[in-house]
Length: 120
Length: 108
Image (cartoon, rainbow over all chains, first blue to last red):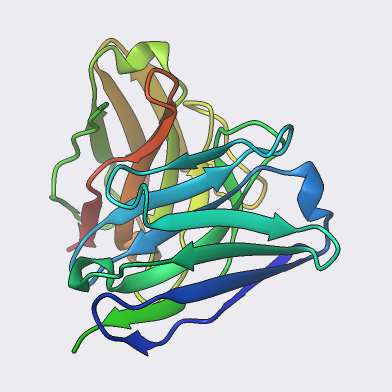
């Protein structure tokens, strides 16, 4: 059974850094494209970042490019999101999501999310 | 960057048909996917590649995509269908994944 378990969310001050983790089970992370998606309070889903399953190419939303970094540790079957220079508008539930294969098409599995709050 | 436009809300009586639109420039040339999200829960895929249903999703859910509009259709709406619905595409020109703004479906 495929499972995605996010962790690392916290209350952090503006300008601070945080690393989110997504532990995957039921499949081999290295074979799949993966992504982070967030849901801010009162807003809709926003794509944050993706990593391809073929050559580990990375992609970022304009709102986070240069501040966030997506990566994975295949030995731990874990996906990460390093978030630097955090802003109040980064406050959201962050979901880890799995694409159906190496292609960047759609998500067939989602985690339950981890809450990041950026506030003084 | 590519923009997907959804109506903020749609209301429908139980047993009737709900149609949620997703507008985008030449969206008919892209593959559109739809998610349902209920409060406090993760999103769930309900339609992929315009009109395919994942296993476990009722046949009441269907999709279409042509021209500048994709549509999610929910037939014989039930109270349990009340949720936020999002359309999504991968925009190859910008290498960005794009969500529509979301539509809140209210069952009257």
